[in-house]
Image (tube, rainbow, N blue to C red):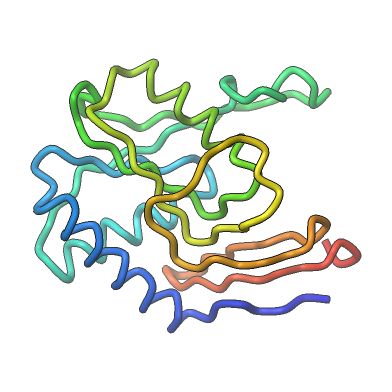
Length: 178
């Protein structure tokens, strides 16, 4: 079974709300950067940067982080891993970082991202922004600072964030339909 939980219009409202929260907490981003996790966090990161510019004229510093070799399971997958290109053309040192990913579930990807960020310097702080927070099955004590939507889902469900032409839909897919 496939069920839409967020349509494009709802995602647009969520992005607007989150951008207002970010400006409230980070001002005009003088010392703040958005760092999206590759590959699934990058469409959300780019949408946030665009929305911040549209709403507030903020040209946010933006980068993309690959965590392939920081994951705790990268040696156990049995398949060849091909990392994404890291796109960080700014200093992380003493910057306020907003880490962006599409879905927070177990927290293991975020833990890997925290390790990866430290390879580039020591930020002043790191906030976590996620479009979907799956509230159950967290394996590490990580919680988002900015959330689009909190959802309850079964362990065997899959949450898919689908971006097409800068529009986004979010689905819950039961285990049988993956």
